[in-house]
Image (cartoon, rainbow, N blue to C red; front, side):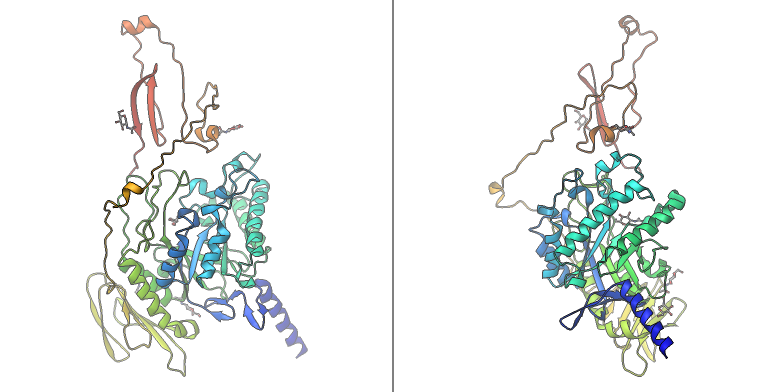
Length: 525
Ligand SMILES: *[C@@H]1O[C@H](CO)[C@@H](O)[C@H](O)[C@H]1NC(C)=O
Ligand SMILES: *[C@@H]1O[C@H](CO)[C@@H](O)[C@H](O)[C@H]1NC(C)=O
Ligand SMILES: *[C@@H]1O[C@H](CO)[C@@H](O)[C@H](O)[C@H]1NC(C)=O
Ligand SMILES: *[C@@H]1O[C@H](CO)[C@@H](O)[C@H](O)[C@H]1NC(C)=O
Ligand SMILES: CC(=O)N[C@H]1CO[C@H](CO)[C@@H](O)[C@@H]1O
């Protein structure tokens, strides 16, 4: 018996290490997880999350955006942390205005919602330089996102700073705050091979460094099969219900950290469409197959202000999301997903505490249901893969009509409350009309100062980025070619041609002060 107690004690200590749940006035506070879901303040939870990035809107917009997300049935807001806006110059920090991360997280908390903090610090996000500050390039011997001492030093310093800021404001769920999850790195599996062994050891280092920060809430790595220790590997994609290979340990839950509600656009792209029906299908599928958290990327895309967008990415970001660039509801996307969240919440008990089963109903239709043996708790998903036509199938003695490629949700295993193809929410369209207040609006023009001191003489072309230090997109390249006047006049050997191998975004060319032509980059299709 003594031996058994000993084993129990060690197991308890281990789970405390995974993530600490502390008692606050007798109430359990904090976040852990098991194979089924995150466990928040002692309870399993179904989590419906949406990405809203604080620098892509203004602080005035935050309360309304968050409230609309809540009304849409979300209980989590997810954001990246954008290093290069917070530390544009080494050691000089900016957390003001739209960069006020603490205020954003607090606003989420004030609305009774949870938050997920994706620290990266490489974040991609169609953001300039993937969020890494320019000055990092000038650190001697640095190799980004690798087992490289200078990179690890600066990454750890920044990540620790942000975590400390959050702790000071008591923003982690373990302190009674809204943050239930943090992310380190970002989709590293997509580049890992290029780093060979240094990639493998870097990921282990990153995971362990993050765990060592003792936030009291779990860490995730998205698209990272070998997420170390208690770090949860999560899925990003459009159809994680059918593509995710599962958590890398049996005690980790299935979490979907990026589900694209549309696609970001580069200049020249047509509007990107992903239907409400298709999104609903993949989310219902995910929850029918052990999923317990989904995150819409983006729920509100917003605007890429100033020079924050990555190359060629438009200022309008995920305008086709459930909340458009201005925060207006896009229907039926917003409403159809709201209805889906309500249907899934009706299944909560069965989903989180029931036993999963699967039953084939026809060649293309299967039932996935969750039951608590010995009780009436039962919820079913009837899923049709038949993309051509509707089918009528029999489940537990009753007939069900299923539109082509759709999922019906039955929170009591009897009555259909939702079908992914059956949209009952209203449609809307956005129009632009002239404002009657227009005369009262004050317009300001901003002209970018073209740096004058960038004079560099070189016999070879220079890398533009290195010259401008990412402060402007404009550079004049000047060169002198001596052409013998007599040769030109006699049209003999020389017929000068100006050839430029790359246009970057755009180029304007002058010879002897005279405009001779211009051209710009066009997206390759
Ligand atoms: C869901 O989890 C159960 C164990 O709890 C497992 O047996 C089953 O294979 C899982 N289903 C899927 C689709 O991953
Ligand atoms: C539909 O077909 C795909 C590809 O064969 C498969 O991965 C998926 O599990 C099927 N889904 C359903 C609902 O049967
Ligand atoms: C960038 O500039 C630095 C000096 O500031 C120089 O050492 C380095 O070689 C340059 N890199 C490129 C790619 O031009
Ligand atoms: C090129 O120059 C013409 C004439 O000045 C102008 O109308 C046009 O907008 C310019 N195009 C680009 C891509 O700069
Ligand atoms: C693999 C992949 O395409 N990942 C993308 C997922 O979507 C986000 C946001 O659009 C991008 O940042 C990733 O590159």
